[in-house]
Image (cartoon, rainbow, N blue to C red; front, side):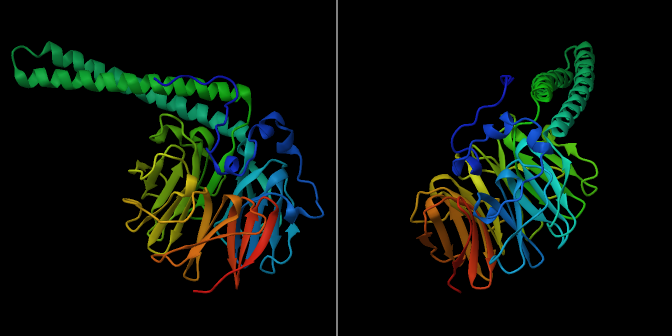
Amino acid sequence: MKPKRTGKPGWRAGQCVLLALGLSLTAAAQAGNDLLTMPALPASHAEHSLQVDMARAGSRLISVGERGNILFSDDQGLHWQQARVPVSVMLTAVTFSTDKLGWAVGHDGVVLQSDDAGASWRKVLDGNQLNQLAVEDWQQQVARLQTELAASQSNQVSAMVSTGDNPQTEQTAADAGNDAADLQTALEDAEAALDDARAAVSDGPGNPLLDVLFVTPEIGMVVGAYGQIARTEDGGKRWHSWQSQMDNPDHNHYNALVRLDSGRLLLAGEAGLLMSSDDQGSSWQRLDSPYEGSYFGLLSAGADAYLLGLRGHVFVSEDQGDSWQPVKLDTELTTNAGLFSDGQLAIVGNSGLLISGQPGQPLATTTLPGRRAHSAIAAVPGYWVVGGEGGLTRIARTQP
């Protein structure tokens, strides 16, 4: 049974992209619920503030970052406007399932929705509700395991009574005993998780969500610190905690989600955590990881998938994540995010790192001006638009 956490969780260096950017994730927790009800304030140069992720809403670019700032550009990143946002927490990820319908997540478990291509947003979920959903999830899991354990113990007793000198019934009794032992261990773990979930309700929101993915306008999921994961099948009207469905007994952080061209979903996180789903996130299976360190980014590049991690560890898979090969790079800097556009691959990371080139070919490593950390990138004609420390910048790119 894993040890119970007490109080607010402490963050260790390098466990998520925000830490790689040198941010303090405890600041949002200390602010309490205030930032969940305080609208983002207008800023004269919000495009120069810390920006953490970007997405496209049709031809529009959307960027999210600190203090609840969400910016949008209709001229390929030359000029930016500030969206109307009902919270002031750090925002960490954004995605659009249609040209109009978008989702953003961030600190204190906040989930925002837009139906006007990112011009305005509303809060649909936060850490208070996520904590309660986790309690309900683990309560159901405990009840299920209690029922299964009672049935297994009954089967064990029945098998032992009828054993006699029959080797077959002796084996049946032994199997029933093993099943009961496994269920007892699972029950103890679920009860510990339920205790943790109840403590989180008392502590209040604090843990950030770190990524969001919608595979259809209706089916989506949000993931984050300490194994937070929630799923919706009705476009965000109702959410369900998915923690008990995951093979993540240590509650490792989930940092990145991606949908591959095949429809398979990949999920990556700390301590080499790597999972896949072939049923739109309903069930997940562990994958063999090529690295025991943390992963901060995933990207789909045609038939290939790329996995981005600490200290220049980048891996490519040609079989939907079943196996991975290291990508040879001339850097040991942490990679945070990337994209594939017009036949070109681009990856950004710490200290101004920009990696670019064609998949399957040697990739060029360059340093962006200012040597700042970046965790967001988008493609526009002739340029990369990168986001991170210092805000948003257009970088001329070389066409393949």
